Image (cartoon, rainbow, N blue to C red):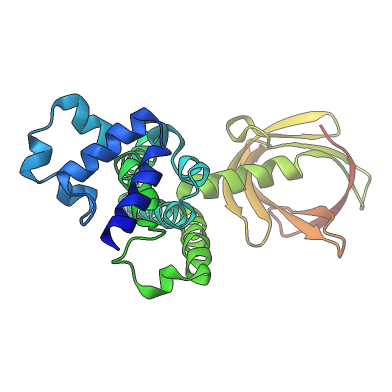
Length: 274
């Protein structure tokens, strides 16, 4: 039986390119047939290798660059999905830390950890796939050995990441800017047919033009949930606070109404975009 197992092992070994055969020989040398790559990297056999041989088994540049795609090309579906879920969970943690600290990490902080993990594990995982028929790491909970677990893990992690992104100030600012751009346009008063041009596309240079007279405005508040934008303008040398509200129809189209400083509510109809 041992001879049959050895013959099968040799057959799988011989089906590889010379580059991979050399890598697999190195893995055998450092004991990767019975331990993780990180434990193998702590052995005296690994430490005795030259720099290039160490890199051959502990770093894969293609996995570093392409991450999960490399795993999927090599048909290591289960491990690729679980590492992807872990990377998204890590990104969720980074995003929540950003929210808590009120700061913004460089994009490389999100990319590098995952890229390094893929690069370090890829060669060892491929060795274990070919030589041990290993689809998933043995120490993983039984749930992740099942198709349902492999599907839920990345989907759940991605949903958590989206939830964290919703908390970021940048996302809120993007939503506010979208709303300001959406209500910008030319409108006509349903009361006295006054023509009003609302230009909030650039928040720092917002303005109203009423029957040809231009009024610079300062946006003071954007209430995304209720579709209300409050702004300040000068009328007769006096600062006045007006608010503009989106009024939606059943088909998700909308009109706007402006509440003046004296409480007057004036509805408008859309004419055209700016």
